[in-house]
Amino acid sequence: MKVMIYSTSWCAACNTMADYLKQSYPDANAQFVPVDRMSADAQQKIFAALHKLTWSDQLPVTVVDDTVVLGTDYAALIAILGPASKPPAGSAQHRHGLLEAVSG
Image (cartoon, rainbow, N blue to C red; front, side):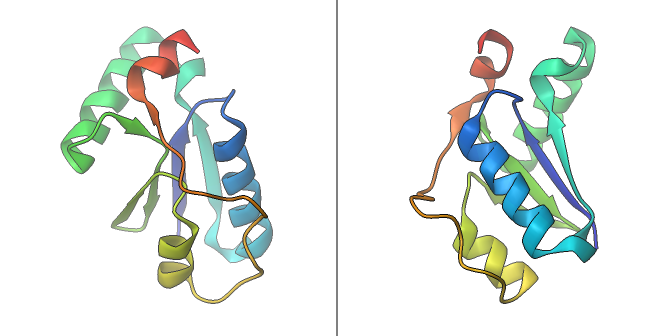
């Protein structure tokens, strides 16, 4: 199983979720993809692909094999990946816009 988390390097909630996934599901091979650190051309391609996949302009987008989770939805991740340690305290659903990825 492979987990890709598309977000920004500066988003604390997204980084916390990525750390939780790596610690709680080490076999999932979770990879954090900081879109804001990509070239402008790569960002445009990623944004187009994510928008086509989610019909949204929000990050983070987590792809678990062929299942997509929008935002920091721990309940959805646990439903997909199985029981794990309790999510971090204060881990409410969080999203931020794609445009913030380049201006953050």
